Image 1: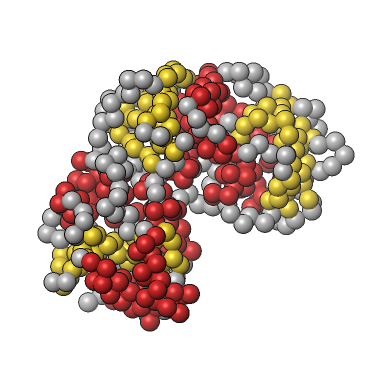
Image 2: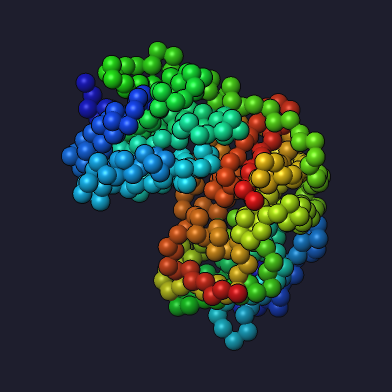
Amino acid sequence: MVDPSQAVDGREPRRGGTVLEVGPLPGRPGIRARGEISEVTRSPWEAALAGLARQHADVSYVELSEVGFVDVAGVAALAVTALGLPGGRMVVEHPPPQVPRVLGLFWPGLRRLEMAPR
Amino acid sequence: MNTVATHETFEHPALLYRGEREYVDRTVSFVQEGLDLGEPVAVAVPGPNLELIRTALGADAEGVLLLDMARVGRNPGRIIPGVLRSFADAHPQGRTRIIGEPMWAGRSALEYPACAQHEALINAAFEGRAVTILCPYDEANLDEAVLADMRLAHPTIVSRDGRRVSDVYDWRSVVARHNEPLPAAADAAVFSFDAANLFLARAFTVEQAGRLGLAGQRLQDAELAVAELTTNSVLHGGGHGTLAVWAEAGQLVCEVRDTGRLTDPLAGRRPPARGQIGGRGLMLVHYVADLVRLHTGDEGTTVRFYLAC
């Protein structure tokens, strides 16, 4: 499990040319990710989101400016995490285009998940 | 008569009509009957027909969800989750009433098998639900083969002669007959993928689809759809497969072949629970593509999607 409060960029072993690094966001509650979110990197992504949910207070940030691709299940994990929060909201910063596209198709009007575009 | 069972029975009549007047009379009376009963009503028919119904309904149109089926149902594979289930699920109390016209004279031969399968699969998707879906068929302008499938896919048929039970009703036979093999395209660019190089399958798609004229969100959609199909092949379809990309009649075509067999006829059409993480891959493909054709059998599964360039 990647715990965003403790991990210094928890790095998954490189597999199939695909890598995801997830770690805490300096100075703000939340996580930042780098790489791609797909089947190969599913486990650290969902673990990081679970850690974020555990520590969520009012606003949590998910910084994705260095993520090149997120698949449908990766976006679903974001949406499901936001749906499960007891209150407040999640702000997804600088996501790749798949994130707003998939949210618009499957979770339109999900107010708890805000986008700060690239 | 058991009134509870009747209430919960799914009704899927075909409406066989000739001419504008009969079309409007029948559809509008179906809508108004629903409004009188307090049922939520949606109408999803091709644009020109939608305007006829809207005009005839007058002020009553405000209480009805009106959708252009040529747009929302351009790809027949997204009609069940994106139009019918979407409306019915939003109104879980009591009976919901929908007019769905997915088949019109301008549908191409390429689209038709997907249309026919969609009509048949409605029966499986709504079994046991208190929903009525009326499907108009233009008797004067549709081929006899289409009308023959209509009789197989609908348990009841309404026409100027009244309402009758279809004595040939057998929706599974329609799904099976239109499960047509999809021969490989001769001039496609081909890429073999497995778990180790899924990211290269995406890059290959972007490169080839861009070269063939796809751009912007459609190019992003192609990449995402290929990611979902190739991931499905790796997880559920034998672990590896072949991706092919080509252009055909102004459309970009992406095809994924693997050695698995798809056993659930409603795969990609059954909306998962809002809080479920998996199970949206094939549905995403249906949502973004203009058409999806699928063949599955003992020898494997082929999914082909089309995007206008």
